[in-house]
Image (cartoon, rainbow over all chains, first blue to last red; front, top):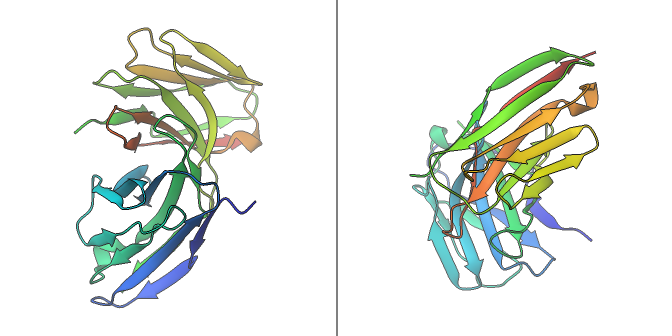
Length: 112
Length: 110
């Protein structure tokens, strides 16, 4: 059982480049979220989805887009990378609002 | 903006000592989760507390949910090096989002 799979694990971008971070889950969870984690800090919510076709903004959505065309996949797009987006990105899924969140192993992104 | 504050931010203690970390909010919430995160990994759930005043034990870890449903604590007895990690509380404020606290980074010195 793979759980939540994120790719890539590491990425270096130049300022202004765009890219997509992939997230897939095989648990048939309705809720999926993207977080970023900066050194010494907790997790800040970027975007989230409560089901296919439904997405909404979190605390720090600027510079990121998401879509949810299937239950399994929830990609995060960086439109024009900036050094401030250097961070570790985590994707998470859960069945309902109050159940356990399962996380991927993270993507470490550096923007130079 | 609904915030979860955790304290202390950093804690370094000797193996065998006891410790308590805290999670506080200005808003009432229906349930709270505690996660532990190790370097290079995503957070992993330790426990969910749902009832005001509830106490749950997980081996040497004791979790308490405040009576007013606005705070929680995690107490570790006889800390071991394997307890080292980032401890995060997380809450759903009733808006479909799972909000995480600022975290407590715990280091246990052998």
